[in-house]
Structure formats: C-alpha cells, structure tokens
Amino acid sequence: MLERRSPIEKKPIIVAIDGPAASGKSTTAKLLAARLGYTYIDTGAMYRAVTLRVLREGLLDEIRRDESGIAELLEQITIGFQGHRVLLDGEDVSGAIRENRVSREVSFISSLKPVRDKLRELQQEMGRKRGIVMDGRDIGTVIFPDAELKIFLVADPRERARRRHAELSLKASGAAVPSIEELEAEIVKRDRDDEERTHAPLRRHADAVLLDTSKMTIDEQVNVVYELVNKIAGQ
Ligand code: DC
Image (tube, rainbow, N blue to C red; front, side, top):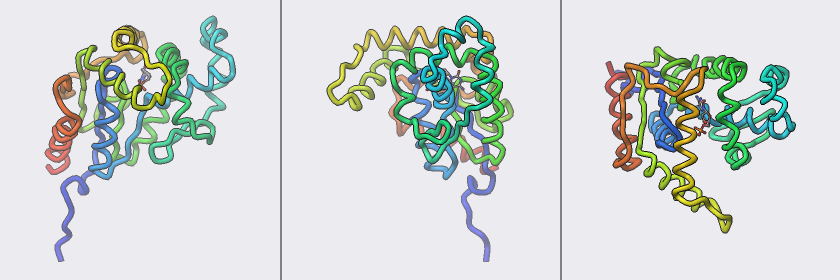
C-alpha cells in the first residue's frame, strides 16, 4: 500500500522567526510548531534564563564592570526545555524568567559575546534533528542562515505595546500593569538596544520573508507562515 504522509512529514525543515520585541514571534512560532508537529524553541527564554542566574547570584554589577566575569557562570549553567517549560539547572523557571527585573537586564546580558557564543552552540545543537520552529533575534542571520524558511515579523510599536498590555493585564491578577505609553517606551528602547549592539544585532536576513502583523490576527499570521512551510517542505 502507498504510504500517505503530508508533504511536511516528508521533509522536516527549519523555520527561523526573527523580529523585535512583542511582534508576535512566540505566539506565531508556538502555534505553527503545534500545527506542524515540530519542536518549538524560544531562544529569548534562554537569554532570560542566563539573566535570571546572574541576578540570583548577585553578579550583575561585577559583570557590568568586567564582562569576562560571566565566563565561569556559563561553564556551570545548563539550560533546556521540557515541552514549553524552560529549565535552568533542572529547575522550572518558566514564570521567573518573565519577571520585570529579568526583562530590564536581558538586553545587556544578551549583548555579551561569551553569552552569545554559548547559546549559539546550544541552539545549533538543538536544530540538528530539524523539524523545528525557532524564534529570536538572530536565528535567520547567525544561528541558521541556511534555514529553508526565514521570517521577519514586524508590527508598529503602539500596536506591540497594546498587545503586551493585554497580555500582562490577563496575567496580573491585581498587580499594577504599566500603561500602554510606558510599555511602548520600553519596547522602543529594547528595539534600539537589540539593533545597535555589536554582536548579532537584530537584522533582517536578505532572504527572510517580511511580515507586518500590525493589522493581522494570530490565525492569519499562523496561516501565512504555515502555507509557506507547506510550499517549501512539499517540494
Ligand atoms: O524574545 P524575548 O523578549 O523573550 O527576548 C529577550 C531578550 O533576549 C531580548 O531583549 C533580546 C534577546 N534575544 C537575543 O538577543 N537573541 C535572541 N535570539 C533572542 C533573544
């Protein structure tokens, strides 16, 4: 009997999704991966986990003075995923890495070369088996420049602030949520930090498909990318 498999099952590919903060990368990537039966890898969570460990050890000021101080910590640290949960040295830190203090410092920690070198190695290893959707800032440019499909998501800053506000309000359960204006200012600052850093700045690979999600629903975003995967993987 003829084997009946979808084109996607025949040729697992790597889907690289990059873009600025709150552009819809992780929501799109997560849903897309579920639909394809692929593994989703949130590389921002990995940078957040390193930042959390630095904060817990009280090493931030020392590393600001001398960034070589992070090398020892990087040798000891283990980061992994269990489904969508993020594990730092075996502990589930999925909630802790979203705390504000981590969000404030993660741009600095992710700008350090030793951190990028370590996480690049880990991420490339995770992609070896293919059939992955990986999102971040440098996936299409540095981690997998040969990924069969590269997507660059953008959305205007006000819209991104509105989305972040809605997301935080949903989770806040009584805690104060920053205003849309404050969130927009934070987003614009983080874009600038990520774009202007020396190592692996946020840039669109020339081959990446540019998708402006300002006026798109999540379903529409996922559908567009799913169709692109289908086209490529079915060839
Ligand atoms: O996607 P996120 O907001 O969780 O990412 C947190 C930070 O990590 C963000 O400021 C940029 C950085 N980052 C990065 O430099 N490279 C990646 N591949 C992913 C995230």
